[in-house]
Amino acid sequence: MMTDNIPKLLKDSIEQNTFDIDVITKKLKLPWLKLDIKIKSPGEDQMQNFVSSKDWRKQWNYPDTEQDSYQVKGWNIDVFFGPTDWTRFLSLANQNHDEDSRCRAHRQNLEYDWYVDKNHWLRQEIAKIFPNDDDINLVNTYSLPPGGYVFPHRDYAGDGMGLAKIYIALKWSKDNVFGMYGCGNMPVREGDVFLLNNYTLPHWVYNGSKDDRIVIDISANLHSPIIKEKIVKAFKKTFTS
Picture 1 (cartoon, rainbow, N blue to C red):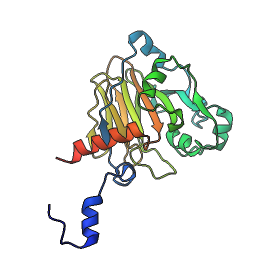
Picture 2 (spheres, helix red, strand yellow):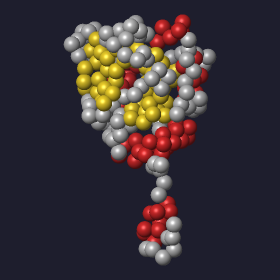
Picture 3 (cartoon, rainbow, N blue to C red):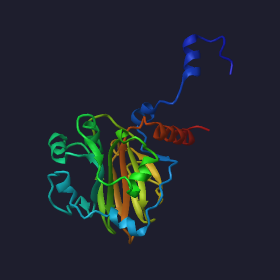
Picture 4 (cartoon, rainbow, N blue to C red):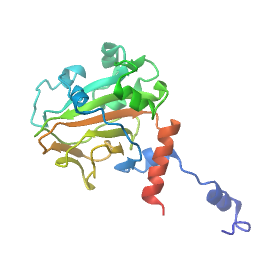
């Protein structure tokens, strides 16, 4: 391309235009990007450890105390990395914001750590993406039994996020649905890793299979080198020839 005899502003714009991770993740409001990340399966015996018996409403101090309200059936959550002083964290966290946003908001003024030891399968797998724990805000699981669902809803954040949630389909049968308003159903297969925008559009989930649906959710610093490279690669694969 000939750029020698054009105005400097245009020349610099052409030659210095690079991929900006904040533009890709925050400004464009894309619904999802599929990332080229492989997560080793823990095996069926270990898989059941990710089906939480905890009541997520109590864990997150959620005001709706019904285990199965009309909007949510069977959906549950368990935390593997997050704030160590949970009581203090809940006293500071804005309940109108989703769990990822709450943990991002207090990452610098509270202690965060793993709730499982260093040999735990999940911790070792995530270390391949985020070798520095300082880059992680929250790691949790979402489990949904057969027939379980979450009604259409939008999550809210205080930091203007778009693509933010790293979403790993740990156990996902073909009759599971993740719908995104106006964008159809996400083309999820078991083992897939997506970067998901759960803030811009209403979305919903339904487990129409006979098996539990288990997802790993990670909130983290997207400027961390490995994940940044994966996001740029996925964006280029999706939008450039």
